[in-house]
Length: 401
Image (cartoon, rainbow, N blue to C red; front, side):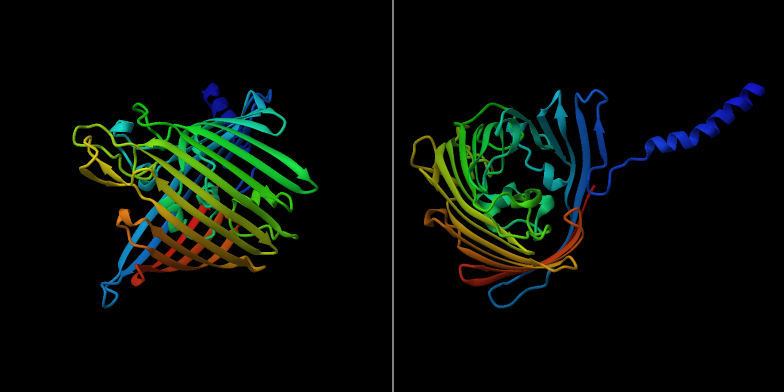
């Protein structure tokens, strides 16, 4: 009996000690778990996040707007891990997607399984200002795509990005940065990757994908890497500008949009291949609450209409080629309300049979804890081939631990 009472007493007195061990010195938005090994041989930072959206859409039937469709979705739900291993010069990032939009895209080239892995990459600083990346992650493409979905100014990315971006792929990247004098910075990025997008597990169809990017920052670095985060949350005290140029060549591409879209499979189960080239010119500017982002994209292909093995009969697959312009401007008030607008224009090559479109978007944001906790809304008006096509209203919130 005495032993039982002593055991209960010890358990009771140990409760405060256990609870104190669970208290973390981290703050909201800095990660749910921040752990560094006692011998500093590795670290782990764990940060879950999710985004919820409500959408109402009115389509125009040629005479009038018809009754709206309403939709509620978990747009993104993700688990992010990052840190260093063995040395602070060897970093890593692992990001997993859980929502249906994150994991969709199963096909025979990924064994018909959900695509949970977004990023799985190591980053080694092997010399001063030089890094080697290896694994699956975003290619150095248009700035809008490389900006995390956690740090967007409007509810989601533009039509330019959805039609022409080069997204994630599996391969290696070399990155370098240098000072050209004074505050003038230059960054160079080069990647060789598989060319078929993320989570491909079966073979390597077609050829490889080659990407190179140059970035110029004439007025020096942005605060908190603000060149890859939309909205001027840091209220830059002096003008900051990044201008970027990207060239991407996807040799013998086997999908309609290089890294994405349908595989162009023929009736004899062989795959149609064609070289695809994509270029981007973009800029990011911030000053005292004002933010501007501009992008131009153009994709070309050696052959636009996919054909059967005879080289004549169309398969029905078409490579999406053309060009797009995207302009985005916002102003952040001192009470952390923001108004932002965006204009996007898309033009396609005639053989694609896709109609040109324009979209105008107006958004309002309230940042509670920067991009980590915010409420966003926007309304978009879309024209297709010069005619009214759609009006969409979106409302959502983001929470990032």
